[in-house]
Length: 324
Image 1 (cartoon, rainbow, N blue to C red):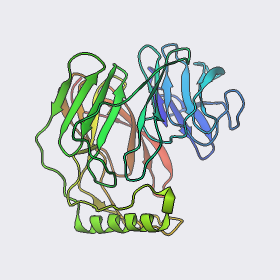
Image 2 (cartoon, rainbow, N blue to C red; image 1 turned 60 degrees about the horizontal axis):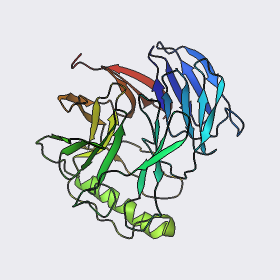
Image 3 (cartoon, rainbow, N blue to C red; image 1 turned 60 degrees about the vertical axis):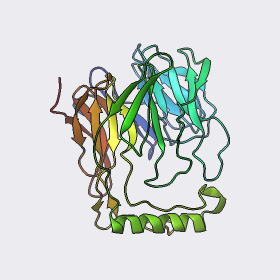
């Protein structure tokens, strides 16, 4: 997890240590916040999001201890709130301009061969529960799941609306709780699944179904011949909407083998995003370098985690060349 303050300072959580560290905009290490444990201001080896509130305090979602940890701008422990959820997922912690939190949680039991029931727990700036938000429904929502299968993709913008779409078409809705819906539509062709890529993914899912039993919630997967148009959304610090596109995969030489014998996937597509202003105006397409995962964006800058020659992670910053 990674976030960036108004001065460009970078907060990074490293689950291997574990440690929450703060660096200057130039990459100079400044301090560590908290430590491993379960006491006040302590955390375990996972983090489901970092955010900075209007007072400069750092909020960290600590799922192992079931809570939100809060730290002062100078790095001291400053209390927090319990959060009861066993869901481990990306895009799990969103902070709006009122300092209200929106946390991804399971809203019901998980059922085999069905999408997981996920919503947002809404907390106010004191940690009190306000309500639970359910993502908008579509009349023709896909019922299954699996790699490259059509699905509903959604997130929540700190500006107060859902960003949501069914990814077998390039149509993305900006849906406020009340008021008019804005729809972003682009005309483009879907990306094919390469034959070798499809074969590897099919073998992977066949192995998972056979070997993981009840811990794997799909009974059957048939990898399609084309990919959906998008796989996720990132809302930048300035409200811009980053639509993550499925792209053409490239062969990876010597991919790391799994520890449990599951088939290796040696095809990966570099990350690619279409970027829109908060009102839906298209700005351009961003192609990330290979082995790089974007974590945060604001204005014409992005921050991400890249993997080196020996899979060592490090933080990178890039500048975009469109729009001011």
